[in-house]
Image 1 (spheres, rainbow, N blue to C red):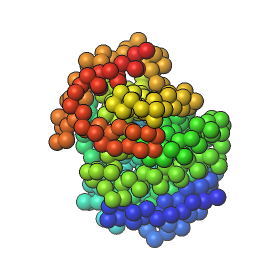
Image 2: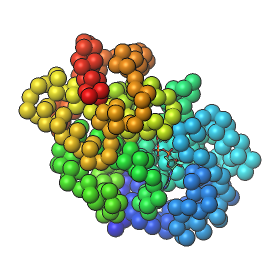
Image 3: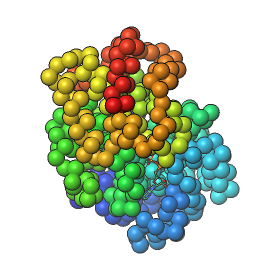
Image 4: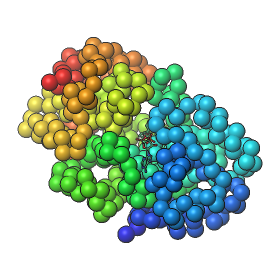
Length: 369
Ligand SMILES: NC(=O)c1ccc[n+]([C@@H]2O[C@H](COP(=O)([O-])OP(=O)(O)OC[C@H]3O[C@@H](n4cnc5c(N)ncnc54)[C@H](O)[C@@H]3O)[C@@H](O)[C@H]2O)c1
């Protein structure tokens, strides 16, 4: 089955197509562009046609393209400059089209470049990881890491279309696969208790990469993320709910730097939502809040995601005081400093002002057990 629907993000509208083997849809979409005016940036994982099916391979070889490595080390200014040079050398004009094939890294890098090249050219996402399908390709955020800071440089820029071909997920490595699934679990905790219960039930199907369940999860995630970003493109209100657990996850990510081997982004989110669940329980102290804490731990275990530092398999574990410092530094950069996303019950999240760091310290302690 193919899901095809129109997304509305900010002032832009564009199609999202989800299915298995959707290259015919892609080819008919790009027909309106002059072939010489199209350029593809592709994750190097596919260099030796690993992970590509025959149809994709023949499509790919017809167009100008370059390979860039996935992994956060690639979201850099030198790679941005490299792509700009290549686009210019290939005479890609203002009415040209840039296509990214890859995970969140290639997607963020290409979307940012597309937003800048000739003051903005058309752009299509072809996400190839769970993170990119469930989260990063939707919402228009682009970014480069700079000065050891995640997404210090970036813009808001929507694609002209997103083509999510689930066949790409066949080759995805286990840790990358579950990291992306974590974003879907996180969204269900804040906005849909039925879907959360469904995730608790279908873990075995997800482990097997069952096509039907993956299509359901990716469709649900796209629709849910769109609901949050449609009315709040520049992240002033409802979109902030999507950051549940992120403040804590980011403080942990800052400790490990940009080295994904120790901690993937989705794993940081898993630790972050564990702390957020503990904080929710400390603040509300009700049957519902206890349930959040217990069920968050249960679901992370079911999906091979960490809920304690010892699960990371490294002796390099940050001190709580360091994590609090990282949060304070992070919060200094925004005007509404001490606001956190907290859940009252599963499916119901809100923004709360917490002035007392004691709660945050206690909540972080749950990761050291
Ligand atoms: N823009 C946003 O709103 C947003 C949201 C969430 C995350 N992000 C960003 O996304 C990035 C993480 O994305 P990611 O987890 O996809 O990382 P990634 O793009 O680095 O991909 C992870 C790994 O999988 C490989 N890979 C890609 N597709 C594959 C496939 N089909 N089969 C096998 N291997 C494949 C890549 O080469 C890489 O080694 C981070 O930089 C994060 O900041 C952005």
